[in-house]
Image (cartoon, rainbow, N blue to C red; front, side, top):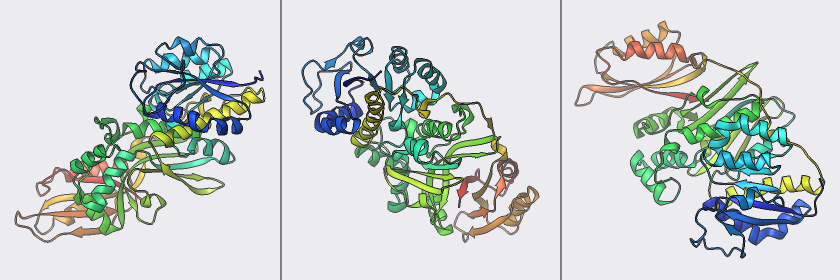
Length: 431
């Protein structure tokens, strides 16, 4: 139904919520102009409405009562910026079932409850949009849905967590330890006080779940995604990787070939000639390969108050345009997705970086090479350091492409050798 104005309710007045309110206050006329209809921020709901956020909100806008938004028939769009699962899911579903469009930046919520939210949106004829949930201010979801709509997305490789990318950049360029780099990231506001979700890879997993589900039009579930974080990354391997011509990144990788998909999150060595190799510090980037367009790269700040608020308001503007024309449709970003066959992790093909700590004696490298060869793994190049005072030396090998199952079988055998003194350090390699 065509309306004369659009009214918005905001749930959550934290960092991003404050940014959204700022944009409404400072750029309200621009938002309305681009929407083609007056757009008003009618209510902001938060448990804390007394703390000074540094902005002056008009009287009567702030409330602690969620019903002031969800039960208000005049509110057309609800922005959910609470984060987490509960009560965010309840509020989102109440809004949808009440005929309100929803804009959210809640990656964890969409990653886990995509099906339930999408079905509710379809049943009620409303839109659920989430540009801000992946990549902050980078317009990746809309880029895939609209700019690349004629393509089958074949592959995604992405740096989706600014905390991890900042830490790995500091370790690479300033030779910092992991702990020192994390501490600096926290001091600069790039890392949370509790960085577990970031450094263990789960934040990246939530984002690639959303990206791959949308890209492939097939439901990717969290439990189907192997996840490895960066806590165990050592500068030693960053240094050796550099000698081979690679740098260390935490990557989210999604591929679809035929009817089978593969999605994973792990640290990887990226060829310095690759587009992603130049993405450093708090920046994010999403590399896409489409069957028609070929390679593309979306790059920018993946988090932060104003970049994320920018993405939130872009969704509000898109929905408001439809309201201004009396249109009713559901965005693909939350359409119900079909099931998909997931490729078994053991069948994934990759090059590998291997670092062994071995006794310095004749024949050890030949024994390791023999095990690899027996399992169909070829050696591309080797770095072997001279004997040290402990009579143990690192041996670093770069392999040719191999099946993951064959690599695991090889390493189980190699790690049991008496000459191998520590568990092998292994990273996948991206050329």
